[in-house]
Length: 49
Image 1 (tube, rainbow, N blue to C red):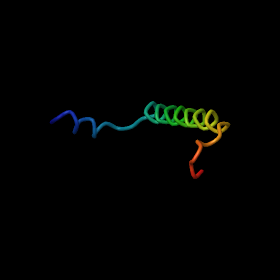
Image 2 (tube, helix red, strand yellow):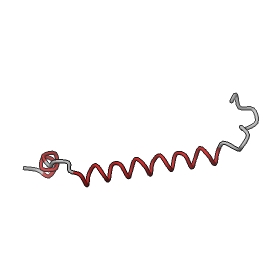
Image 3 (cartoon, rainbow, N blue to C red):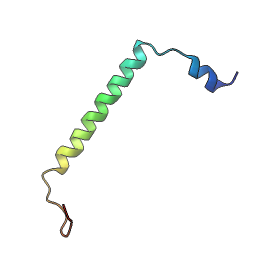
């Protein structure tokens, strides 16, 4: 049996879901950081936005 098949058979437990939640929370905070730092700047000259 190869390694990929063994990984596919492993059950997901509470630590896996906690890690997924923390990674999603970090991704959301990073997205908010980028949005809040980019919003005060005016658009580039000549852009259609």
